[in-house]
Image (cartoon, rainbow, N blue to C red; front, side):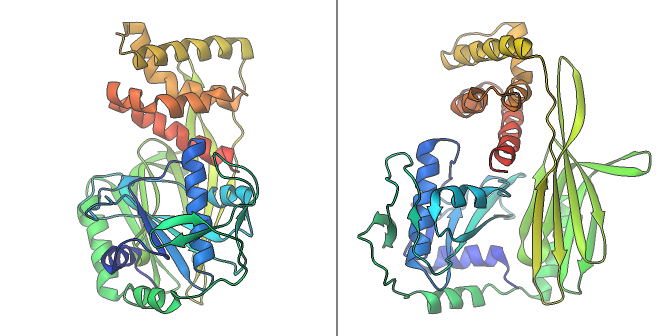
Length: 378
């Protein structure tokens, strides 16, 4: 079983970026340019490594390999994005890897790309890249190349050696459990369970009992063996159920207008552990968004956009504007779910102005975008 934190360290120590490994300060799939560049790198790494895994490490400074981290990223629908734009898409996963020196909520992202053995090409135009384009890695660059069915395999032995040196052991697992429960989450209710005598899952949160059910907020869930953060949220509530073979989370989001808010089930994720040392993760969107009067939403949408424009121009906000700004992420989320397509792009385009003005509102905005990613690619 591979310890993903060790794998990241070994990749960073191996050499600079090359034909099986790339590193990024961050990735942005919220706009066309960022989405296109991400798709290009996936395509190039897959084509350059037909018989082994290739990787993108996210949250690392390019100049000095310094680990700075990125926000927790929920990738449950990322494969759908790749499938939509790439012919013969590779199998990809995005995992959130905690590092002790990073602030709470920050992780290193690890994208693992596994080729199906077939040549990848763009299905359709995206940004400045034409449909039908084929990309390969040329050193540390992802470059378009003339179509060539004969893909060379030059990295299998190197990657196998790197993964071999990232194998987990009992000491690392025990240290991970103790660190999770006694140090990182000493102020929360923490639990652990061993599945199939080899998988260890730890989870922590603030517990709240309603009738015969328990819900958690400030939730953190990790698969300790692989040093992978499975779930993290500072805002939403989560219900957890455990059997001998599976670990299930049901995430709820709080939505509403004018102070009338309630929790709606968003997504169910089931991790099933097997006797052969493997596990399977299945996610299912169970969201039924609340519907509101369109005329009222149209007024709120325009009013909120005017506040964002004032933020962009560095104009002062009234007391009423400040109050509306705090509710803006949730309001724009509801607007998008009720057919206002421009609401998501407004959150993307103005997020940095919100961050400069109010860090708390910015956290709510990131949560809104996280939910929209799930809905968009479901």
